[in-house]
Length: 494
Image (cartoon, rainbow, N blue to C red; front, side, top):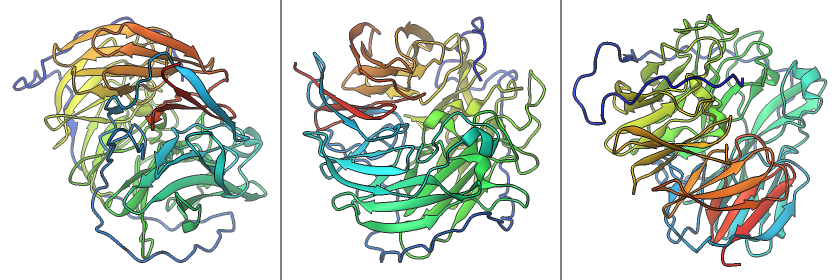
């Protein structure tokens, strides 16, 4: 939840690469064993999955080739979730190329491969668009979305509620994966994974992917907000609760095979309580070269006492997971209590085996990927809640953290200090060839800043309202933004 701005909480300490930390630094929690998977009781009728295709390639981590930026296959472009790509075509003097009314809000980033722009809406519609014109090439539906969400679920601020997360593409097979919340009447819902051929729209995979919920819990209290991830021959799907934290729920990650038997694997946050949402401001799990996953979690439910630490296991934490979702290491922000929500953004993998995470305590943490021990901290981020995935520019060593109350906070990792707060944007940024692009939601502007200095280079009206945490994507000379009714595409040079 949004809170009043905080006073600056301190300076970066120590510098990256420094030796042992003072005892005051927070230490990583111990690795934990995965809880047993209880049986699931579903209130809805689940459709019979389609036949799965025969495996055609190795089940290793999937890279993201972007030569000339011809593909944007998942949230923030790469598995490290840096959001940084090369320059591609010029985006100077931005003008609108086309606008596509898709009949529903697009909360996730548009993804692109094989010459198709893929967008998914809250009406459970999946659409492939021609990048030159915005015309529909193919369209499909996962089924009816949940409507009257507040009355049915007890809370929530997305209505209708269908596909909320960013899809993910396996570029080796030309398949795009989406997950939608599908209503089957009487308040019953389930979450459906669908895989489509990017070129033809043919359904190649259809699988129910609700977690193995404990008795008495219901999928209607889960929100599949975090973006999908594809690696290790699996699709990974994360869950938290609806806005307002109504009902009984846990944070979850589940994984199912792209081919062959589903063999669902799962990780349950907060096994000794409730909560621990994995929503990440819409960001995706980060994945390292070994195929291990990194997720961040929110507070326990109901809110614990202010001031921390949250007493529930793996709440307010970063958790490292094996490809089959066994916990390998964890770090708990022990200053996070109440609704401080470390899981408001996703982990970003940095060079040198490190990662960055920031939550509503307005403190950024640099952790070692190996054991999630603390390398350094920086306080006073944003002056309001950091919300959504940060971006990292390897050329300058700058991180860019979106601030819900306004601005993109520059963090200079090389100099170990805070930089300026870039005004006029609050959505999760991306870095394109040394410049930073970010959206202001809900009003609908997009701004470009110099990644070295933070200087504003240009600002354009999108022309439509945009959803919370909207993050643009860029490919094929276009800058793409999801809106409350579809997609708007821009190109440079006009």
